[in-house]
Every structure is written in structure tokens, then in C-alpha cells.
Length: 532
Image 1 (tube, rainbow, N blue to C red):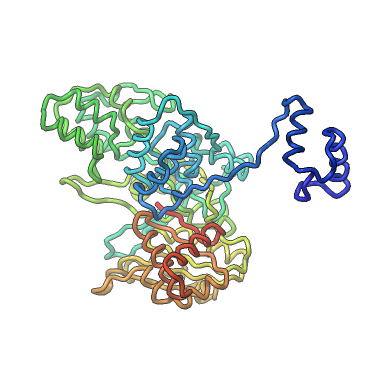
Image 2 (image 1 turned 180 degrees about the vertical axis):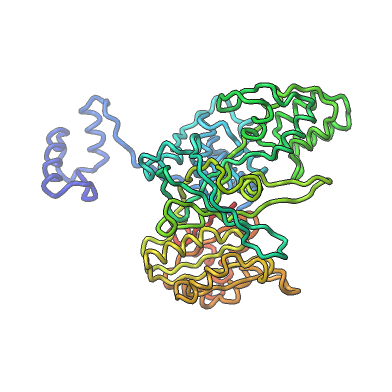
């Protein structure tokens, strides 16, 4: 009766078999379905016999699939699964969950912030709202969620008090430029002091940074609504602040919410402006369009600051891949941050967190941070002998600096291969000295670079992969783990496509066989992507 796979030794199994045989009147060797029925009958039907849990197959859980295809696959599924399919499918943890648990948390009402999926961006936000709007009120959700901070608590012990909901106030020690003068970019190596926090992190984790909006932008928004910057308002956390401070510290001024647009439509008489705003409700706002832009479309709208903030999305933390190993840097955490500044419609736009870290917080001043543990196995292999292939152009190099530090400190003897790319070798070779030192020391077995603006023909990391296809395939055959970090919408997809091409060509496989091979790399824990 008791199967050999049950967690009992031979003596225990024999005793249990005898006990159940006596209880049910069944002979040893009886059909197990008969035993189940007999148990239910003898116990008055009061015992529910556990059924084997069926593992769900989330066929849409593939970052290479467009959102339209993912939603088709999830058609007819419960709301929490449709919401999961709307996510970027990276399990990156930037939302504080993984794709499945974030969808479940929204479905059961535990999470009300619908804008946490950074890699999914606007299309994910719009799809989430559509799914919720269409949800049948009689549908029930079975989505029990597990907050990502649970794993942080387990790791950090006494430091578990520091989390997304209660960040640690840390001192900024350094924000130095990595690009050389002449570069079109401003990439920073940022050093933050965690002393006294008790916070711990592993390589592959991210640091959550709570940004503050530029004061000039907040002031211009207040002027556009003709409000008093000093009126008291209540923030989402229940604090009372001036309107100006609240807009700087608590509300997103980058992405206008549907609720704000609807409010302004009701408060203007200009038919053309109303039509423009209605189009944005249907199709989404244009890229780069922010809260101030909406007010400029709705000139003359009469609104109160207190009602405007009720329509704004909260200012979410920004998550940055950690570029250091605690084994080397101690109670510090290092980041690689690309400063975002561009002009649109005659106005300079600034990345809220990147410009804060680059220019608005001085060394010695503080920022609010928390550790976001990695959920998808994006860390160095547990076996120090396992080879690593790392693809990280631009700021995507950050976690691989940490990986190399970790392997240096643990004296891991596995081979390491890094593909790095950027615009110009002379100006944009981030961490060049460190990487070349690792190469000279033998820690970095191979370093292949691609600088796209140094020749007439643009060359990218995926091109270098194809050029080195034979050796890349050999490393995979030796059991290498493959990692990609960077732009999820373009670069990561291009690298995935190149990887499948290498596998098909070198492994003499069809496209379908190569796709299956790469999928198996992922499911077996040898292919990891960290996208943003």
C-alpha cells in the first residue's frame, strides 16, 4: 500500500502497511485506488485524500515573446495568470516579486501599485489596467503571494527591518565618471556606505534606490496647476508634507496616469486639447511625455494640488544591479549608473534616479536604499569549476564586475569569458583597467569587445558571439553557464537570437532543436538574463 518512494524506511513501511491493511480490510498488494476508497469509506468520508499537485506550465513565461503572443497564450486563464503574462517574464525582482507572484498580488488586492514592472514599462502597465478592467467580478483568485522581502529578511537577520517599505538611509561615498572626456555618455561608478545597517547582499542582487524628483520640475508642475507649493498634503505613506516636498519625494512626474488625464479632460473646454488627451487614454502617452507635458496640453485647467496628487502614481524605487562583492568591498555597495539626460520638445528631460546620483546628491549626503535579492538564479555558479560566459554591454557590465570580484576572492578556478560593448573604445571602455588586470592575472580567460561607433560598420556583442561561435559552443559543451545583462527589449533579444544561431550552426541542429536546447539551458539553470 505504502509506495517505496514514500519517506519511510523498510521497517516503518511494513508497520504502516499492516496498520492500513487492518484498518481497511484490504489485503497487501491491493490496488491503491481501492485503498483510497476504503480509507474514505471507513473514515466516514471525513478525510480528504491529498491529490498530487499538478505543476502549471506557464508557456508564456518567455522573455523573447511579444506581449500580444503572451496574452493569447493566457487567454481563458484566471486573472492572476493573465496578469503574470503581462509582465516582462524576466523574474528580475525589480517589482519586489517575480512575475508570477506580482500578478497574484495584484489579483488578490495585496498590491495596488501597477507600475512596478520596470522592464515591461508602458505596455505592461496598460495591459494590467486592461485586464483588471475586464475582470469578471465573480472570478476568484487563488494567488497566495510571497513578498520578495521575505528572502531578504532571511538573509539579513537583524537587518530585516530595512526593506522597500522601510529603506536604510545610507551615505554616498563616491560618484565618479567612468567615461573619458570626449564621450557622449556620463556613466558613474557609485559607492554607497552600508555601515551600521547590517545589510548583506550576494553578487547578482540589486540595490533599490529611492530617488527624488528634480526640484525645478516639481516647481514647474506646481506653477502649471497654479497651486500653492506650501499647502499641506498627505503622501501615500500617510506623512504630511508641503506640496512641493511631496512632489519631489513621493510622486512620479515621469509617467502621467490615466486618472490625471481623465481629471484634466473634465476641467478644460478646448475640444482639440480634449481630443488629444482622449487619444492618449486609448493609445498611451508618447515616449518621453511627462506630467508637465500633460498640463501644457491642458492649459487653463482649474485643479487643486490636493486632487492632482490623488491621481499621480507613487515614485517607485529604481533597482540597480550591484557591481561589487562584499567579500572584496566589505560594508559598501557599488553601482554602475548611466546618467540619463535628453531634450524633447525644447525641454531638457532627466532620469530621476541617475541624475540624482550623478549631480544632485553630493558625496557625504544620504540616499535611501534596500537590498533586492535576486530571484532567478542570476549569480555565480555554486560549483567554482563551472565556466562562465557573460554578456554585458554598457552598464550591463555591472553584475559581471561583481562576479569577477567574487571569483577572485573565492579563488574559483572556473574559466570566465566576458563580452563587453559600448560606443567608442577610447572613451567608453568601462572598468578597462580592472578588466585588463583580471585578464593579465588569468582570472578573465577571454575578453571580447565590440565598440559600435569605431568603424563604418556597427559591431555589437552578438556579432562577437557569432565570430567566436566554435569556441562558444565548446564552452557550452563543457557545461558553461551563460549570463546576459542589459536592455531587455533589444540587446537581450538580439543576444538570445545569436545564441540560438550559434547552437544551430555548431551543434548541427534545426532551428526548432536549437530553440529547445537554449530553453533547456534556461530550465537547467545555465542561462540567466537580468534585464532592464
